[in-house]
Length: 132
Image (cartoon, rainbow, N blue to C red):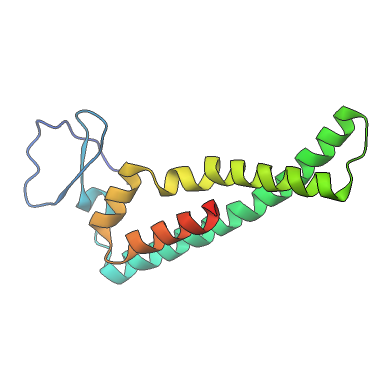
């Protein structure tokens, strides 16, 4: 069941409210995490980070395709040093766009902080690692 957005004027009784930076949107912790235990929530963070790793692997494959396409479009082969430089810059850009930006998004960080004990540290550590 998908969480139902509530207006800020609605009273949220008996649940911790998870607020967002979106005006007028309040979602309860119960709507997001249901009856998950603390261990379940921590495990969900681990699974999320594994998914991020899989996405990073797919981005690496896409970078190679991008380099090949750029090489073909330019009409000249790239030497290894050029490929490495393009790969480095493209990896940094893709990681920022598809991984770091959502790991560090204030709404996401706030929800993870509210729903888990150690999830925020794990998410911040992963963001630093892929941003390096």
